[in-house]
Image (cartoon, rainbow, N blue to C red; front, side):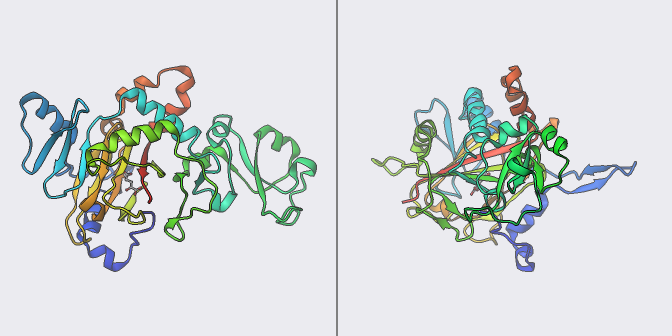
Length: 358
Ligand SMILES: O=C(O)CCC(=O)C(=O)O
């Protein structure tokens, strides 16, 4: 997970690290000295959408890829070299993609779910709405009462500082300078939120003592349905926790294993939304050369059994028109109320991965 692959000299040497560096976004300069993304050779990247197209047309598959018919009305692809890995291109309809993008921005970051901002600002309510309303998060040291920003750093009841959203005009009219940050910057810096049982990143484990809500019913049902191709016969997937990853241009997820769940025969169900990404699926050692594949909005991946022991990560997302593959989703978000969702997702990718913990 986050921070799992430090940029140490050792890590630089592994096959996984070399692949990450190959696909990561780097910038160069064009002839007019303008900053431009460096070209990267994508010819080795597996494209399951094209594989699905040719499979549907003539039943042909590339070597070492097999297709399962699991009653989804569309095939589920497997890799002979990576048992336990399942790829379902376009498994989510456009309506479902929009629904989960809205939920990922509006409801999933709501307390008691935690986000990467908790450590710095405590629980933040309604971040997306505040960004739409161009609000500013201000360190509230009794600000509402006096706007005296020189008070000490603890409020009367002993809690650490409370941060609150204010209208920009309100702050300007009071003319005081407090520690502040705009909601739109915070939204851009939103990196993860955790649903259900809360994952503690510092201990790299689930902290069942933390307040939490159950996985929302609709997500629970979806994950159960999607998990079925990878489930041991006669067993049902029990979604207990989810991590939502938010990627902006240049963001990456370093090579890692998800090994904090008790039973690795149960899959991780991973949904992709928004801009196209490259996913690296390695082997059980970082020395194994990973397979690179595209993940598009609506794709669903399952990792169970042996594949749970394989290093994986996301070295790149594409936000440019040519590569992001967002045309259909942009059309779906065409209502005037959707303009903020569209603005966000045009330049971002969201991944929701759902887990059975025990
Ligand atoms: O973003 C993705 O597709 C992968 C996410 C992942 O590997 C994780 O959160 O552990």
